[in-house]
Amino acid sequence: MKTREGTTPWPADVAARYRAEGLWQGRTLGDAFAEAAHVHADRVALVDDEVSLTYTELHDRVEACAARLIDLGLVPDDRVVVQLPNHWTFVVLTVACLRAGIVPVMALPAHREHELRHLVSASEAVALVTPDILRDFDHLALGRALRASSPTVRHLIVLSDDDDAPDAVSLRALCAPSDDSIRGRALPRPDATDVAVFLLSGGTTGLPKLIARTHDDYLCNIVLTSPPSAVDRDTVYLATLPMGHNFPLACPGILGTLLAGGTVVPLGSPRPERAFAAIERHGVTHTAAVPAVVASWLDHAGAVGFDALGSLRVLQVGGARLADELAERVVRGLPGTLQQVFGMAEGLINVTRLDDPVEVVVGTQGRPVSPLDELRVVDETSGLDVAPGAPGVLLTRGPYTPRGYFDAPETNARSFTPDGYYITGDIVRRRPDGNLVVEGRSKDMINRGGENISAEEVENLAYALAGVRLAAAVAMPHDTLGETVCLFAVLSDGHDLDLGAVRAHFDACGVAAFKRPDHLVTVTELPLTKVGKIDKKALRERLVAERSAEL
Ligand code: J2J
Image 1 (tube, protein in one colour):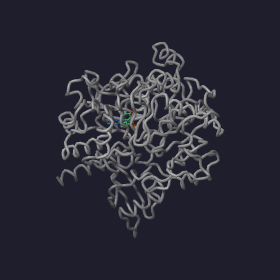
Image 2 (cartoon, rainbow, N blue to C red):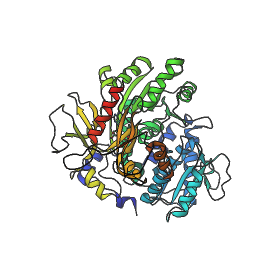
Image 3 (cartoon, helix red, strand yellow):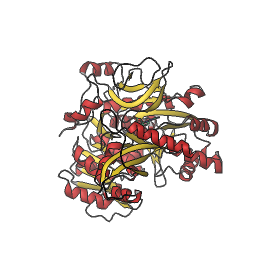
Image 4 (cartoon, rainbow, N blue to C red):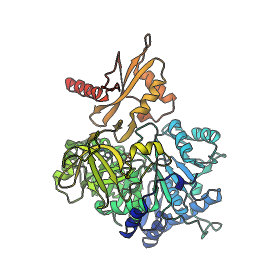
């Protein structure tokens, strides 16, 4: 299938307006990078423990990588599932794909067979890019198994220290400087309206949905998020969140930094010891984190002081609600300015501005980055707009919010209104100054330290366990992660179950480890709503009540 066939276009008059307003520039991300590389030629674009590349050098490797992908037989619009740790090769490969019109599908390092198999098949990927072994997990073996069983995957591309996998293509070799055989080769040129990248949704109903982002809309996303974070040629951006996630990739993140002439520093772990060392060593000015990571940085700074962070100018925090108390500690303690970011791979990005009063920065999740972002806050049941300032479900559409998930008509009927608003499932309050406060969620998800987990997916996996008659996964409040996964289960007579067995079962199913239940509560019955559905609200309230009883 061509990617275009699975996407829901913006209505022609709306698209024309975005073009007329200059939000859609008719430029591809690859061309935008090539222009930046020309302007910032000798400045350092990408640096880590292994390489330090100027814009000219990075551009050369990008062009070479694109040519080598074409030599492998890949053609524009081919999909490539990319599962890489934060590493310089991710940047070269991603920009090379953007340049040649090959579409990366951004998997996360935590994904396992269950998720990758789905991504490969939903995107009809022709290639899979993985590390060989990462954190004791053999990605190469899994890659081989996926290739063997997939009708579409032809190539396995592997990031490895020792290139001893004869049946796989070496990612390092793909990302090497150009040589005479490929230098100056003409490459295909995608159109700005083509799909540039597939991001993943948190997935309310099971496995992640694919979100097709066009060059026009994703460049718009980057261009709009850059000024509010003051990203410019002096920016040194540390990427510790998984680089294929929308937040570090393009809000403004890696791509925003590269288009501005700044320096990107990939780092494989957000652990405070490593992050602090990288910030000090590279003079990092900007970074993005989820609240749980920020909490660990604050704790670490409590022990070693804030000296290593002296260069930090902007700390973006998002992915999950930052508790006001934690926000205050950041504002008081950390050098630089806190920026709250309430964003989503589906589009809409809200940010607090760097010159906002402390009360806004601490107590809100910011406001949209574009005046053409349309927002409605509606009553969950009636779908009508709530009174100004009252909480309701956030709906949105705009120049960088696609009108549907890729090739998913049924989900789209549930997740989008007929007039094209994305139903975020987030419960927000809009203050008179336009800033949003995220109050909760109507979608059945658990946000575990910024990882969005579908309750339904956890329940489906639980039902495969012998003896589970009824299962309900709900969020359990947690101090640093915000929420963890609590599984309530009603067992059939004569059956027993403990948490260890549940977690072992999830591992055996090959699902990402963050989806494993953290708690198991076996019960004889589950509360039901009036229409007979499992009453998750009651279960959540029970967990909250039990927690406060413990305190
Ligand atoms: C509360 N909930 C939040 C916040 C996201 C920037 C930042 C984050 C994401 C992201 C992103 C939140 N407070 N500050 O793509 O570009 C929850 C909401 C939202 C969902 C989206 C970006 N920031 N959330 O987290 O697609 O529930 O994107 O709908 O992974 O995370 O998740 P995701």
